[in-house]
Image (cartoon, rainbow, N blue to C red; front, side, top):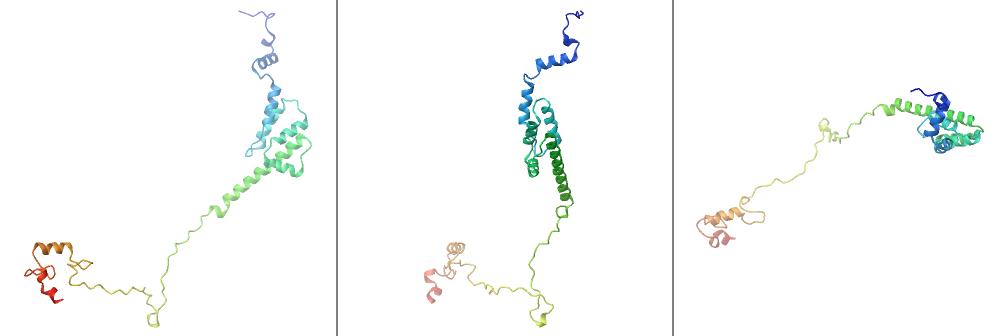
Length: 213
């Protein structure tokens, strides 16, 4: 079914009218107001470059009807502190274009300095070359001769003078308290031996050894 040209809408055959109709029905209700709000909240991240910030700023600035002074103020307000500090030292430029040029210059210097620091870090021998590890400190013995006759003999460490333990005759039957060990006591009771001299001919109360003492 063909459409009568006399009854067809104008935007059917006119591209600008078609775009305007699309924006009217599907675009923001207030494009200028939306752009102004986004421009107010636009800010440059400290670790980003000025080129990305400029793309967004110029896009939003083209949708508003602000003057040069207002745009210059908003451009400066969205910059990170590292760029604001540089601009304040020499004074703020009088126009938006001068402000943009100065900011581009300082941003380029900033990233150039960052690249130089990374290069210095990579090629710094203090950071790239490993430090030789020091051998562990071990105490050395005194190798000085003790007398003229022992010039080549190393000094021998002194040993503690302790008297060797001489086993006593009753160590195998007496405990540290001087009494019979339990196993020895049981052995003498079981075999009816004297508890003093271990003889089997008499009892402990008749032991001549105890009477002698």
